[in-house]
Every structure is written in structure tokens, then in C-alpha cells.
Image 1 (cartoon, rainbow, N blue to C red):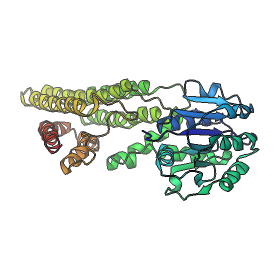
Image 2: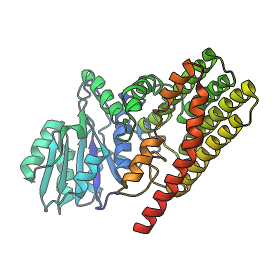
Image 3: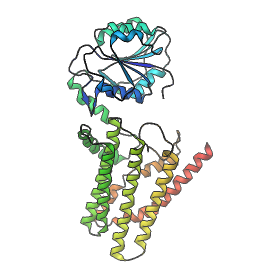
Image 4: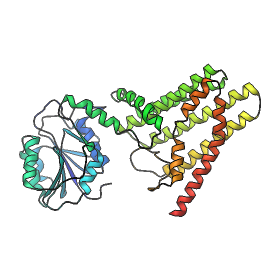
Length: 399
């Protein structure tokens, strides 16, 4: 959350150009995306200045932004810290947070790049007057840099992307999509599954597909795949494993769509989390039943029970500890711990929670040996639950 009160003023250039506030980028008009980025960064006071060249009111429906013509700026009372942003620069939330929280003396400006500037001023109406009479972005920022003392910024170009014309749109899309890749992902997830899911998401964001609908599709594929493990035939098990892998790949799309279109919800996060666990449980149960139907022994059912119960106990405990009371925006599940300085045990447990194990399921299933994975899971799931419990106890003692 932003610690210092600040106003962000988004200026819409009087010239239309190739790219306007209504230009759609990955499912959202550019202006709406910028306003939602500002909201995600913690801004409550968002002012959009438009002389009527564009019909911006519809683009801002449901947001915190206030739309004003330049002539009405004189009566607006902004905060002493004002961020001026053009509609041709798409910032990362971290950049907006940095520019709000950084120390600035009165009548000083910090402009990391052309198109965005943070100004600290005791006379905000003077700044608004500059915006009111400006003809274009270039002249506005030139005047700002002449009127205020300049301060350097400790930021890099990865914190924004410029969209001046149609040729910049592919770069902007790549920048947005790359921002969806999490640092905590497993190797195969980051280098294989995420690339596929992003390609699918790129085609879905311009449709009416919602994140929750995508979750339902993913879970359905996973459950259907689990049914193929009722057979001990390698061909059927391989189909089941490939559908299990497809579920894992498409499972990334719901979160990607939600973050790109700012549709994250607690219900969606819970649906995703428990949907995944339902698929895993279905896989364990079906492998166990398929093995039992082949051998008619008690061991397969015990293995299935151990893997399923261990997995659900871990999921329930992680939900209780890290997700039940989480209210911040963004992904509901990010780690098994809420500690800002996770222990080595937490890091190890997080690594084990990633789904690179699915590739082992594919390999074993190709030889009709999916039950080997069940044996490993039956042993590993209770151990993992014990590790999660012990890690929570240690972190509680340290606090």
C-alpha cells in the first residue's frame, strides 16, 4: 500500500495519433489498464484529463478514476505529491509505488523517463495550470522539467513500456505476458508449461472467457484424465498422464487471464486451489483403483488412501495458515508460508509443492507403471504434511 497520499494525473494528448486511450491491449483498453495499474499500486485519487477528443467515460466505468476536462482543473484539490502520466506510457505498479514513496523536497521533480514524472509542490494549482494549457506531451514535460528542480531516479526500463504507435503493441504485449511468470515456479513450469499457457492466454483474453470458466475447463480435463488410470494398459495410462499434464498447463491460464484483466477474486483463488487438489485426489484414487482391479490386493487401496489423505491434509493446513485470512489483491496461493524470510525448510517445501512431478507420471505411464508414482506419493504426501507442520511450528516459535 502507498504510505504517502498522492494524486496521479493521467493526461490524454490532444492529438489522436495511432494509439489512443481506447486501444485494446490484451483484453483491456489502454487507459483502463493504466487506471487499474494505479489502483493496484494503491492510488485512491486518480484524475484523467481529457479535452473531449475521446469518449473516455465508458472506458473508466467501475474504476476509481475521475474524468475532468482541462478547464475544470483549477477547482481540483490534489495532494502535494502529484504523478503526471501520459496515456502512451504503461507503468508497472512498482514504479508508481516507488515514485510516491521516494523522498522529494518541495518544488522538485523526478522523471524516470519521458511520459511520467513525480512532482512535490506546495502549489499544486500551478502544476495543474501547466497541464491545462499544454498542447502535447512533449511540451508539458519540457515545461515541468524547467519549472521544478530535477532529482534522479533509481529505476530501470523494465518498470514501464512505451506505446507510441501500433508497432509498439507487440512489445507491450510481451512485456505484460512476461510479467505473469513467477520467480517461484519450477523449472519445467517456467520453461515449458508457462510458455504454452501464455500462448493460449494470449488468444483467450480477447474473448468472453472468464478465469473461473477456465478453471472449470482445466479441472474437467484433469478429472477426465484421472479416469484413464483405471486401466493398467500403458496406452490408457499415457493418455491419462497427458491429460493430467494438459490440466497443469491450462491451470495457469485462469490466473493469467485474471491478472491481465484485473479480475482476481477470492472465490476464483479458492476455486483454483481446491480444483487442483480435487484433480490430484482423483488421480491418486483412480491409479489405486486401477491397480486394485488388476491385483485384487489391499495394498493399492492403502496407497491411494495415504496419498489422498496426506495431500488433502497438507492443502487444508496451507489454506488455514496462508490463505484463509488473506485479503490482499493478487494470487491467493503463492507459498506454503507467510514469512518474509522463509527458512530453508520452507524453500524446500515450496519446491516440492511445484508440479514438475507430472513429467514423472508421463514417463511411468508410458510403460504402464503409474502405480509406482502412487507408491512414491503415498510415502511422500504424509512426509510433506509433517514437514509443513514442523515448518509452521518452527516459524511460530521464532516469531
